[in-house]
Length: 535
Image 1: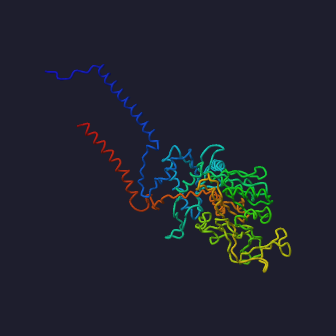
Image 2: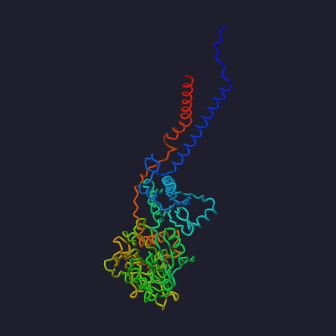
Image 3: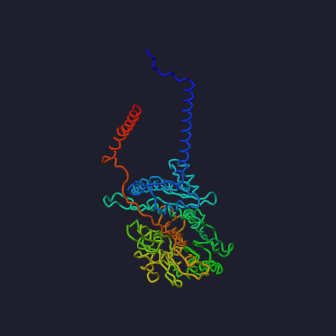
């Protein structure tokens, strides 16, 4: 009998083979981990990242101009998101906008991960959310605050995501339902990022020392809410006292004078006029106590074609006792400027007119059109043309209120009625500039806005319920500063991209693939590998 069995392998040889195999496996593992580390590191670089949007509406991509802006940010930007459902008739449309904003921020953070990030706050944790909102100067939910810089150099820009700031309309197929017509979140994001850039920061000085409204005042007549909105909209706000500070510097973009009660001296008026003549921008809210005469806001605005009219503007109001329009009540001085009273062409009022919103006026004065400066334009922004509106003149006799001198009733033969009265006007005109000022420099022309409503910027009206007043004022500041970014982004097709789980077969198809297709595919791969080893 012949022994054909192979000679046994020595144990030392087996040990060496196992050592070589183990070393090879360890080396391959180290190489694999090293390669994976470098691949993941490279994937964090936006320059080496390739993205492709498979959605039919382009929901997972950005306009090229937005991508370029994100990659060129001067410093990292963080978006702080505060979203909450309001359970209103339009909440479904607002919820859609919130969802699309989250998609937008997610894509933006992927495009420029080293420059842009976002953080969504849980509003169910009321205390923590309130603390963060307070730190950001935010007094409302359904908003996004963009921040750049740290500490005292932190800059903020506000993006509102509420019903008033969105393009919401009734569904033609179902008038009881509201839908989001056009979503312009990408344009809003671009504008917010541009406001944060250092070259688009604008400086506003608020006049003080003559009984003007306090920009930090927290009472009803104060302007704290306006101050917060200006900071949130990318403005740097300071104080100007003519006696202490003297001439207004060239680094100032806008001078804001809000309802002074004491007269300005001729020297102080000359400082303001000199600032405007150098191409400065001026916003004046008429004073209640000092509207006409020497040192008044009326004298201040007169060179720019904005003439102050005497008296208060009144309009008939609804008498709840008789359910009819009536006069003789203090409520006649509290009315709304409706769509017909808004200038549909001026950049300040055009968006408010398009949204058919109303601006509230209380105890307002009025302007008359004068002569515009040479080569300039003069336009009415807000006007009251309601039937029966009149100018109530003060008379401290008879049935007039001894505290105010007004009787809120039209006095035949003494007062004007039935005309169109201007409540706000804008003047723009060229100024002489030195030869070293570029032709496209904004300081080659001056801009002035006069508002005849003393309470326009007060905390009492500058609230979430008076969004048209808020937007009108912010539009005034942005127009004066020429922060008209004119951002235009291609609109996405308004198509649904979610699966319909109630109709159709999409959900059933996915379930079948998950239950049978995927396990079957893996089983097939296992059988193929087993067959190859056996063969």
